[in-house]
Length: 259
Image 1 (cartoon, rainbow, N blue to C red):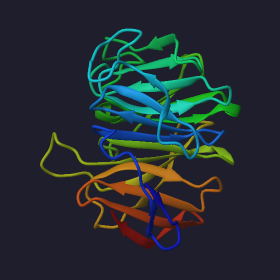
Image 2: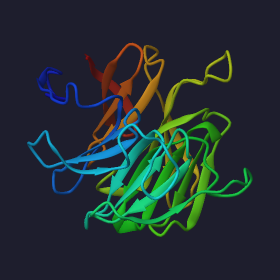
Image 3: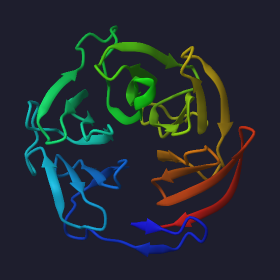
Image 4: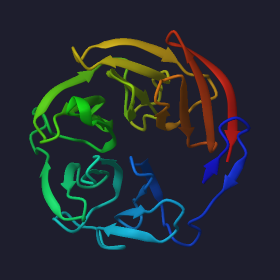
């Protein structure tokens, strides 16, 4: 779905009867569109202005945990050379790297709950290639884990105010700050306040937070413009996209779009 950023009107949409449960959406440096489908257990790549996938990774409707299968993959992050990382995701809790042809390269995860690379629903990826940095929203561990592009652990960030971290993102023009958003917590009756968190990638420390509008109950994804002047929050229930302007780290809600 393409939406006019100023009016909130839907410009065009496609994919009906193709996707089962599309989840993650990424546009790479060449304008290719990548979609993770947690129902199909696949990652699909589409060329610009095309509705036919030019690459499918994972076996359609066949969950698994090996070099050719996913189980509900949540997100994808793409390098400039076309290689890509997949947060595989709801079932397998691992990060998998593939080359540009969709061939398995490596993966990392840990069964030890006390160790880095132990994921409990890696839900979102934030990539900044120039800084050799890949950060993971480790959703149900209530933390963010960051690695270099070879999967070596760098740092993690957690806070008593986090709750489940659903999405992480960089502004392309500034890798010194990582943005994250928390979401609905199914484990407790009293919900965490919904916020955007700002983390320094130099220290790994939480440096600030921005309170979200009270109407945002179930934020599920976050996207940010290259200069961090606009932030978009996708809310699940009701299905709404909130657009914010960010001025001196103060958010102002400037529109909301019902979809």
